[in-house]
Image (cartoon, rainbow, N blue to C red; front, side, top):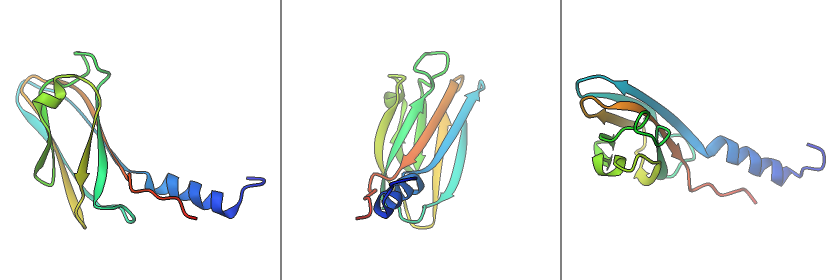
Length: 127
């Protein structure tokens, strides 16, 4: 980048490498309760508290869940009340050192697509 300072390059590099940890996609459409489990390592440089954003389909009844549960390391993060609005929502969650477990469970007959994104809100640009 012509004219870019080392500080600017360091800042851009830090932002692009540490902002998003993982995204998880879940699509379901069965007549029985079903779920999926993702196991992942806490990314280096991430604080213990991160922002979880849950995108619930496109916001329509056709592509969104109305009744599901999301748990991180056994702690309930979102349930049917949160999904009733069929919109995206944020939660602050705690990651543990080492392996973390994200579990998404859908109620019987639910059909839709979820995207769960973990973002490091603790990002601080280098000086």
